[in-house]
Length: 203
Image 1 (cartoon, rainbow, N blue to C red):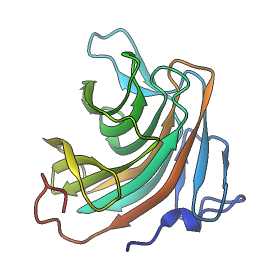
Image 2: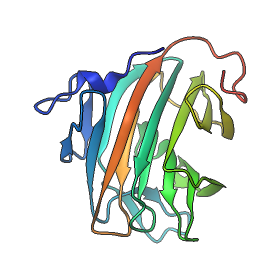
Image 3: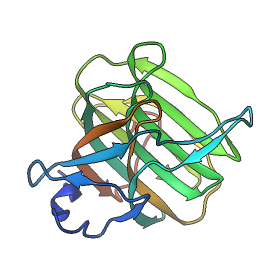
């Protein structure tokens, strides 16, 4: 079992993590983290060119080379597009995120966004349980997104290439694009360097 890095965060300091767009947070217990996403916060570069937004709180690690991150997440789905997110960020123009999101179709779903100059927006499977595990894998410039019920068994959401620097920002994002604020719960977050045999299977 990989170390839950949320245990390194305290009420007073974020340990090895850093903020992009710092926000308030709480530690419901030693192993979990609740991030308070302000209202009207998101990361998205509209492919229609109508708006660019990059103000959601993102708590990240600087990570070099290949990795796997996974997190168990939950939230109340109060407003459209509220989401618990795992994000990888090379730059403002090149990043990707995997979301457990309240969609504009009235569902809660696993959603992915890949930004390479502009963003796409891909709704995935509807997932009606209260909590889900999310996983992001990097192998060179290949990335894979997965979701699952238990942190051990995975379903692929997306497999893609993103030409990124060796060191990128990797971590947890909390967003509330359509509402006045959202509390996003991360129940576990881990990072490991074990080689992944099958990017599609996620193991």
